[in-house]
Length: 361
Image: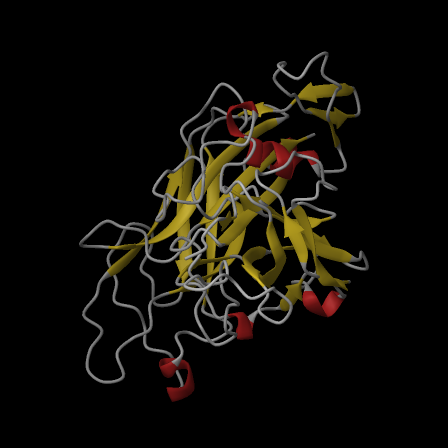
C-alpha cells in the first residue's frame, strides 16, 4: 500500500525538518503535542482570523518516499478551539480544499511559497457574526488531511492503493491515528502587563466521547491544565504563532545556525520575546464539569440527535481562568495545554488545546 504522504508535527525542530517522519502514530510526545502541528496554519494570522481580512489555510505535505507522489489534494476544516473528541467535518465552521498538485520527496523549507505547501480554498473573510461578541479576531482549531485525489490520480500499479483517502464529512477526524491527518489547535492571548494581575480568560469547548445510546455513562473523565516545561528558547511552533503578531518583529540572522529571535515593540523600544517563568494557577468554569483534575461523568446531550453524534456543534462551553502568580516581564510567553483525560487510565481523550499568554506593554 502506498503510504508516503504525511503532515509533519514537529517540522522546524532541530534547525531542520524535525524528527517526525509520519510513522510514529500515535504521537505521544508533549513538546510539541500532536495538536500543535507546525505543518498547518492560516494565512495571514498563523492561528487566528480577523474580521474583514481574507483568510486561507496553508498545509505543508511531506513525502518520505524517493518518488514524487502525483495528484495530491488537501482537505482542511476550521473549528472553534476545543478539547476532547474531535468533531466531524460536517460541523466545521468553514471547510477548505486545495487544488491537486504533485509532491516531491522531502518536506520542503520554511517558506510560505514552498512547493510542499498547499493553499486550501475558498478564501474566507470572517464577519462580526463569526466572532465572539466584542472581539475582532477568532482563534481556530484547524485540521487537515492529505491524500491522492482518486478523481484525477493515475490508477495505481496492480496490488497497490492510492496514498491516503478523502475524509468523509460525517466521520470524526482522527488527527493522531494517521500520518496523513494533522491538527493545529493553539490560542494566543495577548495580555497587557498593567492588567496581568487579573485572571486571563480562555474560552473553548469540551467534547466528551459519545455516550452509549442506553444506560449510564460509566467512564469517568477529568480536565487538566499542564504548564509546558520552561525551555531556554521558544519552540518553532511558538515562534511561528508569535511572529504573526503585528507588534513583534524578527531581526535578521547573521547566519542560518544562529538561533532566531523575536522582539516585541513597546513605546520605549523593543523587548526580547522569551519563555516566561511565572507560576500559573488555573480555575475552570464549565456546566457539568466540577473543576480541574476532578472526576466527572459527562452530562448526556440534551437531544437524541446529539446523543447519536456526540455533542453536536457546540460541545460543552468552557472557560479557563489563568492567574500569573508573580509579576510577569513584558515580552514573556507562558505556555500550557488543556486536555480531557480518562480518569482511570490517565490518557488524553481526543485532542488538547495549547494556550500561549504573551505579556505586552
